[in-house]
Length: 104
Image 1 (cartoon, one colour):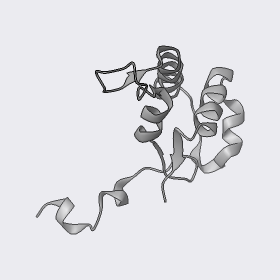
Image 2: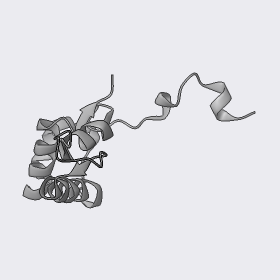
Image 3: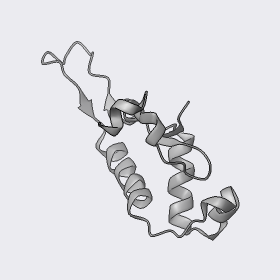
């Protein structure tokens, strides 16, 4: 029997980060980097991205994903005090722009 058939949801397998289940909100990422192209001179349609915002978000996410932080989840937010400045800045910025959010 598959383990997936035994559970109601894959949310049961989400890992906690500092005692909270968090995700990267992909819709917010798209919302932050897209440029409104509904102007009349744009006849092609579709969407365009703001390259500067895209690159900044890419770097911030890269810092979070590739960081070699030794964080003790049992200590909670206090263990973030030992994080590097780039990690703290990236995390704060992504939370502020609601790119990283808590799972409800």
